[in-house]
Image (tube, rainbow, N blue to C red; front, side, top):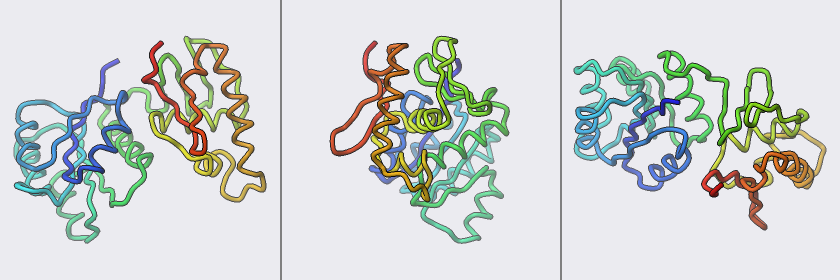
Length: 229
C-alpha cells in the first residue's frame, strides 16, 4: 500500500506534535515550523497533502500558498488557522486551498477533511476502509475483517471498534467513548463501556489482537499498534 505523504506547516509546537502523533503510522508526515522551511521542502519533495497554518514566521501561510500556486504543485492544501475572517478564507481558496479548518478543532474532523480532499483528487481508492495492522473495517457495510476472516460484532461493538481505530494511538476517556458509541442522550450508565470493552477484547483475543487494546486505570482506553507482535 502506497503511503500518503503529508507536509505539516505549523509553528505551534504542541499542535504540531499532536498532529504528528495522531497520524503516525497512517501517513508519511514531515513537520516544519515556518514558511521558509515549507517552501524548501515543497521544492525538494512531492506531497499529497499540505496542512498549512496561516500565521507563520519568516514566510506567511499565504506566501506558501502563492509558491504552491505559482509552481503548479499538485498537492491538496488544508488551511489550519485561528483566523476566521471571510477575506482570509476567500484569499486562501483563490490561491488554491482545498479546505479550511479553524482552531480549535477535533483530530477526527481534520482526518475526515483530509480524506475528502484525497478522494476528490483520486488518491484514495478505498475511502471507506479503515486499517489497523491486518484488520480492515469497511465503514460502508459495517463489517470487520482480520486476516481476511470476518469478525462477528454487533452494532455497539462495531461502533466501539470503529471509534477506537479512528483514534488509534490516542488515549480516550470513558466519557468520550460513551458519547460516540451510545449517544449523548443515552439513558445507560457510562460503566456500560467497561462491559463493551470486555466483550470486544474477548473477540479480538481470538485473533491475538486483544493485546493492542489497553486499559489505562482511572483514565480510559487506548488502541496501541506500537506493541510488538
